[in-house]
Image (cartoon, rainbow, N blue to C red; front, side):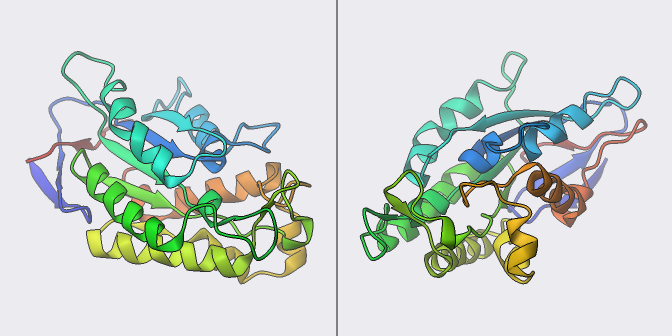
Length: 243
């Protein structure tokens, strides 16, 4: 059995005796849920469908995204959701993908109002969430997308902006580095493109990706080295085991 070191301080074993797909849970907010993708249901759903092809079956992924969730809400349901997605008795999922934080960054009521989740509180909560998740299995984190500031406020009360998004995503990124958890920095990549490029990938609400945006997100995830190395093929499947 060949052992591979993961960046979440766990080890993976590549089993050649029995091919088994990975069981993966994706938890987070509307970016996980896929709101705005009227064709494919979001990047998680698109990934799930691609792994359901009879000719090339892949891993199993559960979409556990909830619209509007903030980090505290994801933390509260993390372990319960995790424990109920093993499919078989005494089994639990092999990987957790997290994506949350943009709703925490929003300012409530006015452009200079208080953040929905105080930044100091957020820093504590993200550290706690990553610790909690990493004790269960290997963890990956997919970052937030930059909003269209000109479309704010969202729902007439929430003001999202790039400055706050940057602060909160950096808190996540640094916390992931500290825990050795791979982080996909979507915000930093998308903000590097033109405003026109980003607008073409966002829904009219300025907050959620549209069909094109979720296609882009899926490509980003599939090309991410942290995911690409677990791509399923017809000969072998990578199995996670906590040693």
